[in-house]
Structure formats: structure tokens, C-alpha cells
Image (cartoon, rainbow over all chains, first blue to last red; front, side, top):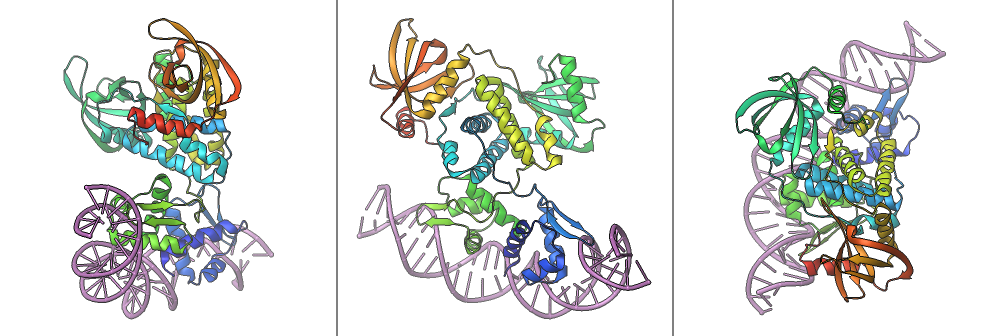
Length: 229
Length: 229
DNA sequence: GGCATGCTGACGGAAACTGTCAGCATGGAA
DNA sequence: TTCCATGCTGACAGTTTCCGTCAGCATGCC
């Protein structure tokens, strides 16, 4: 049996056992040495499996690796599909792909009768005005926000004057016609909004910024008078 | 990328495409040769995945695969949250509530560390121009579509002339500034679009209409020159 | 301390993987 | 019919990965 097949088997094994299983037992069941089992576990963990190992106890697959069955009402399915269609239509292509993937995963764990609601949903998103972008840039911005890392951008402001700045991005706003990155600007020492279509160049920095993005978001919200939801 | 990882990716890729996909497309997406893709497909099939391949058509993953899908990635959660926020912002209130409920259910199955990404997501939906509505009407339209039931409406068309008609609604389009119900109009004997803000009154009928809404949607799509997705 | 277990590093032979090439099969389109 | 897109299989050789063995450390319980 090839390794790839064995890894799939291992997942099934862990899924079956609700009690902790010793590595030795797993190794035997898979017909493989203990050392190899440890390597397999490590590989699965590297792919995101939340497998917990405790000395003297054994291994246990924690919830959070495989998607359990989900139950949604028809209306909830409609809402998710409509929202995802909007993301596909208006988000960058990576995010659109993610939306499709998410729906596909949901479809896979939905009871069969609800599943058809996914493809056949009657709620459509009309095409909007094409948004000038920056597809790759949007993905870069999102990833910088997620990792709380600085960005260096060349920006042309409303008046046409260009500048180069280092910013701490913490939010991305999707409007009908434009997208706006919200960030702390090191140059101006204040919160600034940057229309993505005015960003001329963008470099992701290795450096993390010193504040938490959640905190900045909250602060920015109150500064702008936006309710905290 | 290791083979094991690639196999999981391949499963998700197949899940995502609900239509047949050519092996060549899959191989390209995975960054691997066509021959290797065939080998991967064979491996998955040997593991019990029901993947159908037809010459001249492509591959299709039948329901009943071997493993439930992996947990959502961060990007997928972002996409779902953004989409739901848009629905809350732009949908009718019932649908917005459903979007919230759906997110809550998703949150319940997320591993704890991922859960905070839900509320704290940095992707925001900008407020759009307020849409004149009809909140209750929208819910009524959606429900009529779902049940494939006729609606009687009073409508004021572009020219300002009013009419009363019975329609068979089968789709609802969300545009930036307006929402449009798509229906078969008994009066005109053709597909018609009705802006929801021009619907003066609306009565849900008990009577079901004689056609399937999926079929009408498909027919309307090709009549309008809209690709079938 | 003894024990069961988890976990890590190193090593060399064995096994699997991969791309290339070559060819066949099938079903729809021209 | 002839084409074409596609699925599918076999063979081969270079490369990569894998795997068992050994050796050792850590943790927590008795």
C-alpha cells in the first residue's frame, strides 16, 4: 500500500476510534512500523489535522479536521449561496474560488434533499460595474491583514500626487464600485483609506506590525462613528 | 507538494466543479502532468471515491465519496463571512437573519482558534445606496419561488402605466441599486422582469404553476444569452 | 525507579513517484 | 466518413521519497 493511501486510511481509523488509540495499535493496524506512524501523524498534522497525542494515553482526532454534517434550513442555504455568488462576482478570484470551495464542502455534508438547493438557487447576483484591479493585489492585501504584516505601497491620491508609504492594513471594504484598504499609515501617523485601484505598486513586507488588527479595527470604527455591529 | 496532499486537493477540486472537468484542466491546476493525474484518479478510485470519467467529456465526482471534506480554510471562512455580510446588508431582513444563523452554525463546528475569524473578519461590506423596498415582499417572492406558486401583482411599468397580472416567479436578481423578479407573465405570455420597487401590491396565490422553475430558469438564461454558469 | 507512551534525529537500502513517449478506445462534431 | 477531444494503459529511467532500525529524550502515572 502506498503512503498516500495509508494516510487516508489513517484518517478513517482515527475517525472511527472515539477513544484515544495508542500509536502502536495504529501502526499495527496499518501494518507499518511505529516510527513510520509517527511520521504519518506529523504529515497529517502538517495538513491541518488536529490530532492530539498525549504521552501515556494515545492519539485522538479532535473535531476540526473533517467537516461534520451540517443542518441548514432552506432559507439559510439560500443566504449562503447568494452571499457566495456575490463573492464570486465581486471578490478577487482567489476569494471567489474559496467561496466555491466552501459551498462545495457544505454541499458534501448536507442532507441530499437540501443539496439541490445549492445549485438551483433562484437568487442571482446581477453583474456590477467592472471593478478596476488589482486581482493579485487584493489577495496580497488580504493575506497581509491576516498575518498582521506591513505593506509598502505606491499610492496616487485623489489629487494625482504619488507617494510611497508603509502601512499597517487591518480591513478591506467592498463597495459597489471600489474597494478600499483601511490601514494605519506610518507616513501620516493616522488611519487612512486607500482605494485599491489607486495603488500603483505593492510589496508585502516580512515585518509584522506591532498592534493587533482587531484593536485597530475597533478604534477605527469608533473614530469613524461606525457601530461595533 | 506531497502526493498525499495533492490527492486531498484533487478531491476538493472535483467537489468544487459540479460539471465534468477534463483531466488536462485538473492536471494543470494541480501543477502536474496528465499521466500523473490519471494515476491519482486511479488511486482515489481504488480508495473508494466514485469518480466517473467519460471520454470526450471529463471527470465527475459522484456523491458518496470516501471522506467528508476537510475543515474550511481561513480563506473559505473569509469568503463565507463576507458573503453573509453582504446578504445582511443588502438582502431582505429574513434572509439577513438566515445568513447570521447559518454563520452561527458554521461557527459551532469550527475549531476554537478559527472561530474568532468569524466575527473579527477584516472584510467589510460598504453600505450601498438604500434600496427602496418591499422587505416583506421580497420574502414573499422568495417563498413563492421556492414553492413554485403563482403570484398576483399590481405593477407600474417604466412608462408609469399600471397593470395587474398573474406571474410565475422563478428567479430574483440582486443588483446594486434594484432587485428584479424574473417570471413568466401570463398576461404577456413571455418572460418578464419586474423591479421590486415598482410592484405596488402582491398577493401570494395557492395555485402552483405548471412548470419547473429550474427548467424556466434554464430557458430564460439561454434566451437572455446568460451562460449556464 | 519502572513503565507506557509520545517524539525526534540519522542513515542507507528499497520502494514509490513522475514525466515522457507511444499507443488504443470512445463518442460526438464536422 | 474523418476528425478531435478526451479517457486510459504500459514501459522506462531518473529522482525523490519512504521506511525500518537504532538510539535517545520527555512526560506522566504507578
